[in-house]
Length: 110
Ligand SMILES: [Zn+2]
Ligand SMILES: [Zn+2]
Image 1 (spheres, protein in one colour):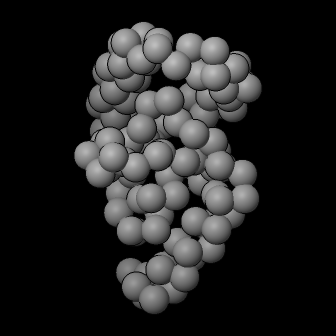
Image 2 (cartoon, rainbow, N blue to C red; image 1 turned 45 degrees about the vertical axis):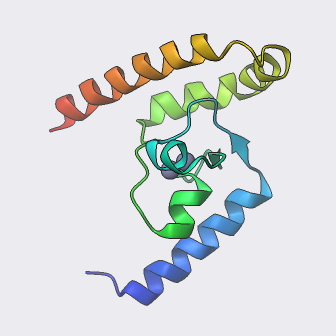
């Protein structure tokens, strides 16, 4: 069991690292979506700044290959976001695909 204080400090530290290079997720985690927050993720942290700030579990959890792929897609996604603000329906569909894949991955890891 880690001490709550030290994990909180660790979380704050991670959160500030995330703010140094935020990646705006086209698919916000459910916490950000429910709270209407921007889901800003530093790819090496695997959690978004909101969840780290609040020290809650971020359901934006993916396997390393997924994150590697996301990292490669990051610039591409950013371009798409700028050019296609009205393409939300497509992102919603991808969100569902990602959640289904996440569920599958969790199932395989269980
Ligand atoms: Zn989030
Ligand atoms: Zn989150």
